[in-house]
Length: 205
Image 1 (cartoon, rainbow, N blue to C red):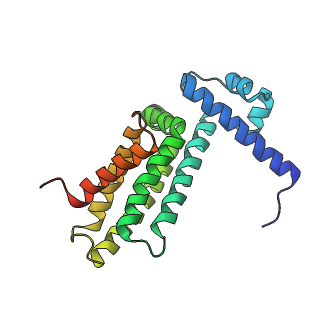
Image 2 (image 1 turned 45 degrees about the vertical axis):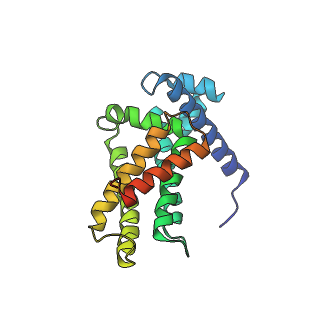
Image 3 (image 1 turned 135 degrees about the vertical axis):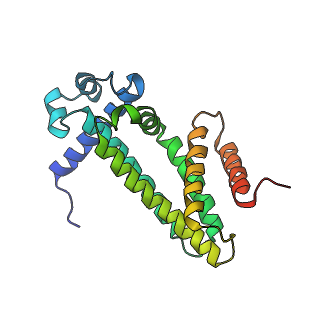
């Protein structure tokens, strides 16, 4: 891959700084209450420069969400295809990785969850469609892992697809609820391990 030119590096830096400023404004005042002028002031770039990179705040919101979803997808993909790691350990790692990702990117996650019905369904339905497609790929990763686990007799022979959809919902719920708990990393890992044990071994005595 050819090295980036100085202008390309400068463009990337400006774009990152503008998105960071937009995220801070969205988190502070909400998407609908934030203006392009406020983002311009926070980013310390003239409004004309902001419009050079983004036609409006919807495009900023779109890129903030999609970039994070792609990043999470890459993390889960790397975990799913780890060599010499048991299926059970990979699933547990996926649960903990998504929780850490939500915590590290909680401003974007919260904005997306809170604003999704207000923005995506009317103003940006294509974003919702893209996120759903990427979510489906993640479910397929889990389905492949459960299918492997069934073949290796690590899991009961329930439909792999059903287990994957259930697991994806549990992972999201566990990661999301962690954003509203006062717990350190050790406490979070302990809670997630407990949830994983409940899922994989059950709660009946």
